[in-house]
Amino acid sequence: MALISSSSIAPISNSISSRASPSQELSFGSGLFSVLRVSPSNPTARNRRWVVRTPAAVDPKRTDSVVPAAASSASAAAEVESETAAAEKEKENEDYEKLARDLDGASPLEIMDRALEKFGGDIAIAFSGAEDVALIEYARLTGRPFRVFSLDTGRLNPETYRFFDAVEKHYDIRIEYMFPDSVEVQALVRSKGLFSFYEDGHQECCRVRKVRPLRRALKGLRAWITGQRKDQSPGTRAHVPVIQVDPVFEGLDGGAGSLVKWNPVANVEGRDIWNFLLTMNVPINSLHSQGYISIGCEPCTRPVLPGQHEREGRWWWEDAKAKECGLHKGNIQQQQESSVLNSNGSPSGTTTHEDIFDTQDIVSLSRPGVENLLRLDDRREPWLVVLYAPWCQFCQAMEGSYVELAAKLADSGVKVGKFRADREQKSFAERDLQLGSFPTILFFPKHASKPIKYPSEKRDLDSLLAFVNALR
Image (cartoon, rainbow, N blue to C red; front, top):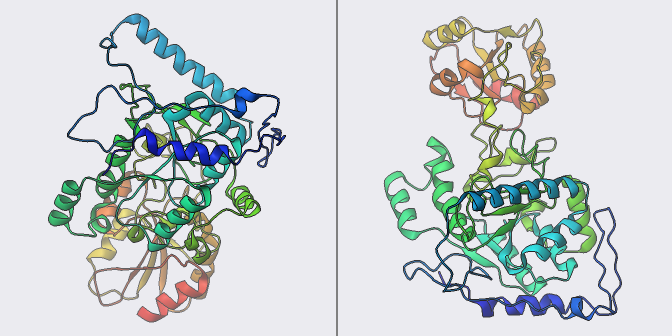
């Protein structure tokens, strides 16, 4: 992978500077479409120049990080570990917390402008090839130079690669691509195959193809900009601030607190992002028109159905409450499985959820009851059982169709049941009941011991009934 030199950044600066006419007078507001004032009377603002200094030292064995636009001089002394430095770092972190509170109600454009103003060439936009193209449009509207990088995992959809090309041409920029280490990819594929993530989870593959390349990229920056939104993922992004000291990755200076993470659209809802994109007439990934909302690697991404959450299209075979690839690992709420549980077994700090699927047509099974179903080779009647958690929004969403299905099957000879498979029962359900994510639906045939897992994300009445009728 080629090292990005300072000369590769200059065209970006020139192309963007040319978009802001000296005669334009635009002003900030509080909405999504607020823009920046570029005053003709301010020659300093019009003629802002960005200088990229060559890093003092570059590791000759690896030159694939995103190149920092500023580095300490060759004569700089070694970093001094002292109480004073620690106090300054703590004070800086406190300042970012205050800045996050101050900008919490600001428009994405204002947040973007503050980020680019503060960090200049030491900050870059992380672009995934989806609706986060909005970040690039906001950066363009500030009139400031900006940089964009992206992770090419080698497993993206063809439509995403074409989208990258369209974005580069539309904004007259060059995206700084980061690639996984070929030796690591080769070792993973040779030892576990091309699709091991379907069997043992996506984290290992994402670590090789995404997390480690990102780590290398961020080591050349002091800040980065992401498209995270609070409404994107249940359980993991609900408390994303607009600015934070990155809790996971390190920046150019090294050590904890050396990297700042900006999330300009944290408080913006998905529909407002789309209104913005359509209004500004920017390029859009053609996968969106095919039902894709959240877009990642081709084997791990699929379209979602109307009414499904956008993250249900990612790693659909896994727990719906923790769908992160590792790039934003600091968001994951560990309370679900590792924190102290309150008296009703729900995670601490969460609200109490009433039980669901509560009807006389649905039998509530205990663990011994489910174990008995597993042992039987010859049942008197077949069973349909849903493995669920009452806090899961996807389980809640299918409650109506499952209850109606149970009513229809009441006199058909098919028993309908439910088994709460979270908390202390989760490991058992994962091991013996094929639980991958909630809800999981199993059909226990009359003359077979092994249950059959419902393979579809379509949980409407007709789809569930067709599944039962095909097997009973």
